[in-house]
Image (cartoon, rainbow over all chains, first blue to last red; front, side, top):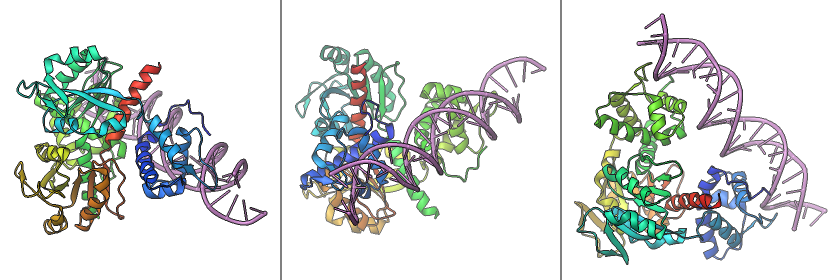
Amino acid sequence: MENLNKAVPSQTFRRLPDYHSLLVKMDEQGAENVSSTVIAGILKLNDVVVRKDLAAVSESGGKPRTGYAVRELMKQIGACLGYYNTNDAVLVGAGQLGRALLSYDGFSEYGVRIVAAFDSNSGIAGLEKNGKPVMNISELPDYCRQRKIRIGIITAPAKAAQTICDLLVSGGIMAVWNFAPTHLVVPEGVFVHNENMARSLSLLSQHLAQKDRS
Amino acid sequence: MENLNKAVPSQTFRRLPDYHSLLVKMDEQGAENVSSTVIAGILKLNDVVVRKDLAAVSESGGKPRTGYAVRELMKQIGACLGYYNTNDAVLVGAGQLGRALLSYDGFSEYGVRIVAAFDSNSGIAGLEKNGKPVMNISELPDYCRQRKIRIGIITAPAKAAQTICDLLVSGGIMAVWNFAPTHLVVPEGVFVHNENMARSLSLLSQHLAQKDRS
DNA sequence: TAGATTGTTAATCGATTAACAATC
DNA sequence: TAGATTGTTAATCGATTAACAATC
């Protein structure tokens, strides 16, 4: 078994949510053990990849002949993914997408809780959505600093995204989840994850184009 | 310059949307040329990576001393990403997230147009959102087959996702964009792209946890 | 025990980086 | 011309796959 103190390889980390959701499903169905071969079959991965991945995140590992303990493994992966340490987040841009994320409670399951939304439109501000306050964007930096909030979600148009990002950074935000289709410039140490919908759409188009060609 | 008939490496393809959005911005600002070093600086990439990527998608390439022609490069990348050949798509699950995507017109810019939505809730069905019909899910397979629609977007809860996916496949869908946090099983030849929000959240948590540790 | 399954070591593959030649 | 910049070839790095030993 490998040393758990070592960082989990990035490609392994990418696959962890898939393992996790599969294990949750299996646990619900009452399965107690599962082999790497079965997991690999369902997720269409090589079975050695699965074993290597699991070895990298599981202290206990699997047992020859019986495989891995479903519930234990599920918890270990969940812990590795940070599902059990909740972080508060603010969301900026209370348009359609922003409100959708705001009213989606499923994020808490993954360790992130949206506590407030901000918008430049004063008409929207002051309302509550799903029990969460919607405030004017001018209050953003103070709000974040006072509550030591470290995650900011940008669901605003591309044109406004950089300005919003700067505001978030000035409020002490350390991690940005960006849904705007634009590249953000941030100071060293601030982490940006782009929810790249444009890329996703391209992947779909690309696949269809390849089909057409052959 | 490399042979353009070769497939674009997957890692290169992942970066293309970033180049594209940056070039769009530069074009708007009136820039005519740009060097790989400048692009690399902004996107925080190695400049050789940028040149290799651009060589893989640009017929014309760049010119020593002047760099790459912004507008031309933008178009070549856009073409490579499939932004200019529009595909119709249907969306299933007209909840908050589904309605948000439905009312977001920006997708057409990236070559995908949502033409209709479906929901199992008959109350929602029959309505129009943003000029697009919302129908009962029972009509899904026929609708897709008749119009030869090949892209399906799933914005339903995880529990319903597999059933919906099967319906889409039975309607002839070849590419699925899945927002439900669950793994889908599909026949050979059908492409699934998971919009893995759980992974995104984990990346943010992970980064914060690393900060805390050091 | 025999056999299924894990976990590790070595080989392969693909992507990134470094060094440098080509070009305007 | 001199120098900035591209594009290519070779070296390095990381991830995947193959082969196989370890284990219950």
